[in-house]
Amino acid sequence: MQIITIANQKGGTAKTVTAAAILQAGAAQGLKVLAIDLDPQANLTFALRGSTKGKGSYELLEGDPARQTIHETAQGIDIIPSSKNLATVTTSQGSARRLQRALQPTRGIYDLIVIDTPPTAGELLYNALQASTGLIIPLQADIFGLQGLYQIADTARQFKKSNPELTVKGFVLTRYDSRSTLKRTMKDTITAKAAEMQIPYLAEIREGVAIQEAISLQQSIFSYAPKAKPVQDYEKLFKKIMEG
Image (cartoon, rainbow, N blue to C red; front, side, top):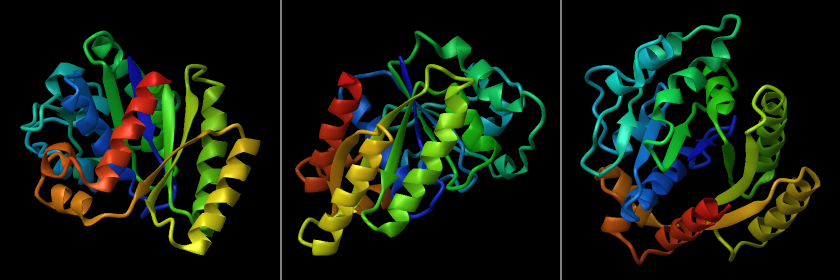
């Protein structure tokens, strides 16, 4: 079982869209998948049509059993939804291991768990990294993308000391337009800098309105627009993740 965190300490990188797409691809392939929304904004919960009623990720971190926080969705994806109370989660000694301990009973139940995180360093991101076997970094092909790569890679390096299972699976360029000379140049620069840090390049996701339309309608991108270019890109990304 893979437990994958989608993270970047910079906002606006299509982090939540990437998390949703990977989960939807898994469900489309008949896998048993679980979404964990650790972002107080609850965007992943919305995208997957998860319920915000009842217990969720806040209660999970506070010690409630995982089975009491898992909800089924119409998209065929189980979810531990977000809660505005997540913003009140505090740090204490050993608190970054709370999610790791809470997920122990789910081992063997799911083929894939994907965790969405807030675009900041802090307790929620730290819990995700401590619990995960893999990290995927969504970026845009610009100078801020390079800065974000350095930041999250440094954070992941620190957590590999306490979680040897954690590997940086690679980075994904989102909303990518190959017609732009600047985008192509930044792609080459980011790929070269990432290689120096031993971070693989996984995929580029082309820009397309179908993704945002599907998200706004709370539908799986694979049922809404399976032939759209960015949907095909996410399908290739999913296959690469599962092969790795």
